Length: 372
Image: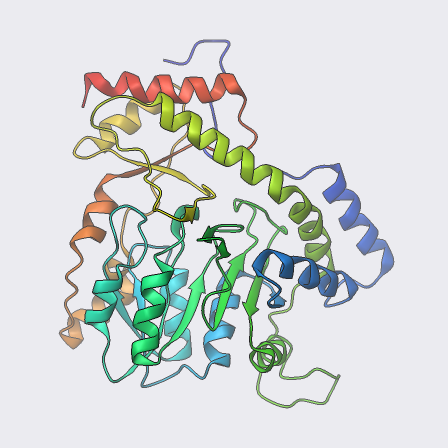
């Protein structure tokens, strides 16, 4: 039970400081608030995080995925292999192009796409693979890229939760044809709202730039059919400040995770494993609590420890996917996905945690021994 002097420990703590506020005010006073110099500077600065790739800022992570798929020519008649254990936006971006979502199972450690399951899911209609770097742990990109190369498939990385994560020193967002990042307030860095497409292909980057801005680079010189998915200069200015904080925040998240790894010792709770060569950036610190998750959540609530389940329902069981798949006779065999949805529980790991709060999180999890 939380004592009268203890404040609850939040599972997330989005940060907006004076520097972010000053940057936003500066842009608003400038009068140039949409798709201007701040956006261009943010794109240039973010490029350093993804090995110098071209970067195109848009209004959300979902838009980044959607426009990248469109720029690659993915559409009706195509299939894209996606994990069902993710936020719905991963699959929604595919469905919005008119392509069919094909779900593949995950690896139990990383929660990322299982390359063997992806290999088994490839058909003549497969156009792309979309690995999701869930919770900040990179997917098995080496093996996934080999699958993609064998079948000549595009790889679109959903890196929306994985800013500064890497595999064998290679940053996520720089493996495949393109990557997508989100700057929603709860992410490891934010821009109030926004997203970024990353790609090594200059022509693909130009197509995304056209698609985000009604199909034009110059006003009234429309080249293709596009949409309005631009990032504002206010968001970009905030994002630039947050990008400057990302390195220190990431190390703090990693240190917090290491502390929890060392101090959560109760049998029955599995702390997050990290694959060899992977740099986990801990968007979430996600443990497994088999069999008694609801009781564990109630006990943590009583102790004042914030927590959340990401994601309680796999995408393939959500109504927009479940009902059409049932009508079409598609049945997904995803045992690791189903197990993860029943067991995962995310605990506070954000960089604003004080040492005393970290100790409380670990002690409260260890106190679950009575119900495990």
